[in-house]
Length: 439
Image (cartoon, rainbow, N blue to C red; front, side, top):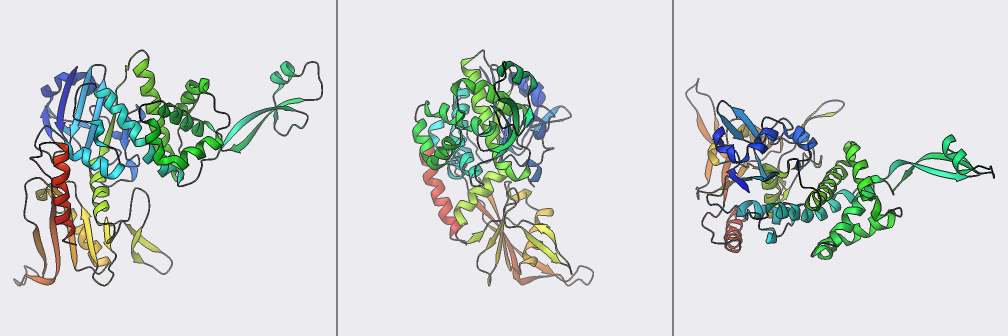
């Protein structure tokens, strides 16, 4: 097995990728949008609406004699090659930070041991399985998906399109029935059948019932509507869903779930079939994971607008007829009288500047906030940097700081010397406590 482990947002000479040259040939200079169509799972799916992760971003981008890695972490496999991209905020070989965020944000347990290279395909597969409850619950918050399907009937009350060939075959000699096809809305459709097949597969996995117990009500709902379920139809249902993905923007959560189910059932086929001849893998937007993790720490004191989900949209301006200037601050404090704006940045303290400053100041001005924060992962134990807003101009040579408006770069310390994952968790708890005291 040829393996290569790298950090996100790093640059390496092309020769360093020789152990995984098959993977490189298939993913280099291809956008995330293109790779998703090839079967690589990128989370969250809505890259088209993300600020930090765009559909044009690449996992590997050529730059002279080097490859530049983007803002994603994850795992790729092709034949006997394995590429792992870890968080740049860990110094050692054990990327406990990614595991920790997955556990806290998506409730993926540490039993996966993502850092072990042996039998990594099985660990990737387990990761997909443990993500299903998160996706299923999220999708079914919008209710059970209802789509149009074509149903075949053979009775004396034709209401759809007459099927001549089937009518001749089934109704000769004629006894009064007419073979016809009718297009109608139904809960028992190809996607719900796909979800049912995936659930049934997970049930027979070790600890499958425990995993599905987290979404017991959702599983029961899927069972109730898939009356046409048949284990023998798995391959057919899988192919139908691969040919027709959900495209409606309102149901993007179901599109995420659909793609995950396809990956699980496809991976099962490759594991027990003829072997995987195509590149496969899963990637996570580091900026999204970091933002959602911080939300778990401060959600009791802050509102959390979500641009990827279109929730909590704010507007900069009002006109005579409308509200314009759509914005999504990461966090707006619930204390309206002493408003605070907080912005998460999955980047080192030295990389926060320029447009980052303008963005937060615009949010602060809009919500009349006197305090702003950048919350970033800190691997060096850096002291918080408090910045006072200037007033006046260099032309008048009277620039001075304002005493009432300040922005602070505030790091959450990421442990670098943990001896085990359990030790890392203990040290992260202390880092969390120190951060929360600042708000």
